[in-house]
Image (cartoon, rainbow, N blue to C red; front, side, top):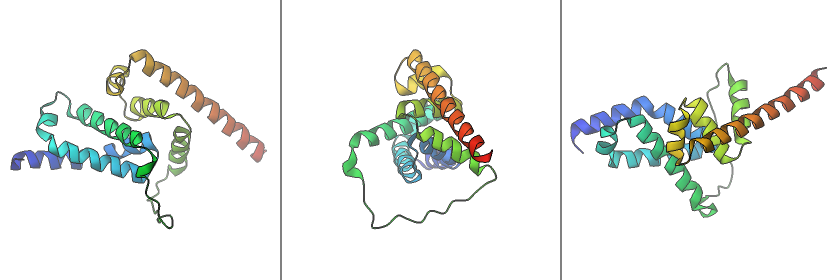
Length: 170
């Protein structure tokens, strides 16, 4: 890779790394797996930086790479799981909206993978229906269907939580 290409690559990664990690985390629901997915995606991006930089929309190109990396990882199966003798320590910086973030993460984790992926891309990455359909290689109707069903499940679960909280508090 030429020095100027490498400089562009590093600048791009520095600017987009938090967004890529957030997207991967929301799609897969596991911080460590999200790290692996982002790292694999960035390795592939390094190898194909010229093609990505020449794309009409570099962010869309990289999102597609990230999503394909996630789907490839899911297809590999259980044999890639590494067992540890004990759970690793997890310390995370907390911000004022921790409860809301945890609620959204828990609600998304309860959805089937396709609905979780569509809702993450549509609302948390703010992508239009057509772009999500293109990323997932499906029809816009399929994206709309997953969106509708996913939002209905989220509303239902939120209603259940609200009812439970009201009973506990009252």
